Image (cartoon, rainbow over all chains, first blue to last red; front, side, top):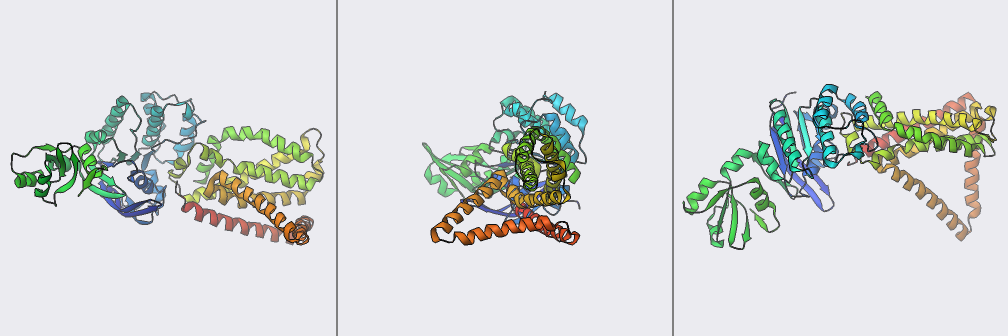
Length: 291
Length: 224
């Protein structure tokens, strides 16, 4: 079965005590990088775990390359490289032992790729996993995920806790990976600057719901932040007002159509292009009022 | 797929297998000091099996369950592998314990007593039942769950004794335990009959099948 989408999530629901995912729906086309953003506890990790069938969904459909993530679990997972938020491998075993134990599960596993990437990352293959720093553990998880020629790379907060140099290196590698237009990446983060560099699609999760899901360029081209007094808010069309918050000088509002905003408020209004940081803050911050 | 899972567990737990050798020696020594060869062999088998069941503890310790469950295998395959590997490792561990039991110095057991066919079969049934009993706990609640389950049974036993003493039904309790003892002794004696052995094996297979289905049901609902 072929599909234009690497991931299609439709009507996903999962209820925990005190938290629920509510009808989460989004898609990631093949050959693109998708970013899941949102504050801690928004539900990003739960969504990723559901896609990986590590967490059972209450309702909804998850398709990977057009295949059901549970009915076709073996084929789906053999095409996914997965990097965990906290890499959990067998701490007292060497990296080489992990390669020998886990590599054979993947039909397209390549020892040559593993060796090359391990060498590039300067991974000590005879060392125990627990002897590595957090950054090195993440590098190892990434090498494992990339050594079987995965069509889809799913990473849960891969850059959290990493130094800026390694983060930049990681993002560069992802961009290189995507030069093969058949590869796709979904990664969650709350460090929005990482996504600004490489993501093609952005999905913002807020309190277990999809607050927005659209191409990054559309978001950065059309969305804007406008500052003014409280009366200004009343003059913005509610259809384009996506969030606001009170500041010491007045109010700050996020709008999804900068042309319509200028038309409504006049050309003299001070408008800044929205960054992903603005979007996340104005749509999810505790003192913000999401529209 | 089962072979890959077996190789994976063997590689990633190889150190534990080596470490467990010392425990086997200890269990064999302790069992060698018991009065009856039958009871010693059965206890040796159960202890050896419990040790193999605890291999899952390493996955818990290193929070590695997510790695295992994100491999391209179904959860049903993982459960199937655990039962199969549990039996293979359990039987090997049991035989190793038996060999050690008659080899350790000061052992009160003899080769003829320990390797008596009826005793061996009875012990292997005990090994299989231990796996069938313990595996659903281990797969759903981890090794901690198994020990909580075993601890819970101990507490239930103590409470039953206390309650029996309180309401004066100690006699009834004693008869329950005597009935259990009779079942074990009779089973051991009647294993000489081929028909009875087949019936027993069928019962063990049924219990294991129910345990397997329960484990699959539990693990498919487990969030990692």
